Image (cartoon, rainbow, N blue to C red; front, side, top):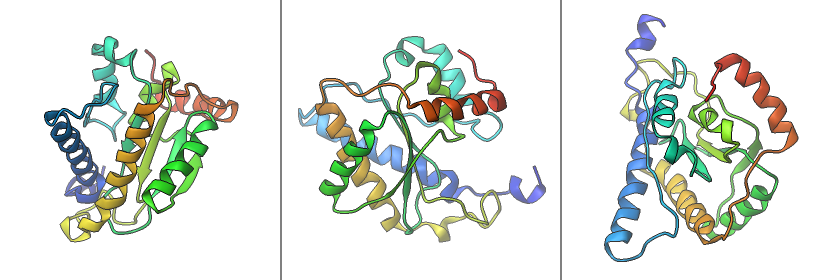
Length: 201
């Protein structure tokens, strides 16, 4: 790590994502207080130790096996808060592409969809082949530097992540059974990441 990267303020990567998680938690807490509750339990988590090796999420899941074994789907955010196009990358079965299209119709907007594992905390859910989605603004040249400050944050950059996530959460909550597992292609890609990160539950 360079002296410059150590001084990163982390506004977009990844305080923006933390803000998104907090906003969603507040939204569903407010609904719950009004008696509008989801059928499934929702967990909202922000973990540290991502960059050096996904340590925060791995420790939490190892120490909370009861929660880990009940997880049926995961939504992850990485690089959030800029008013630029988002994309989603999912690890799961093909059924989710049809689900995403339904959510796009409800939101009135579309996102680029990619299939495959992402080198982030979602990898620590793969031992149980838990379907996962990562939503992101994508890469940027000033990441992990002092230039990643609040001037890059635009409140409009949170509209799509929150709207899409809310619709997806509500839709999945309405299903009797959320599709589980991965495609063969994703399984092959995960072998590469397993060698690189060495996670093992």
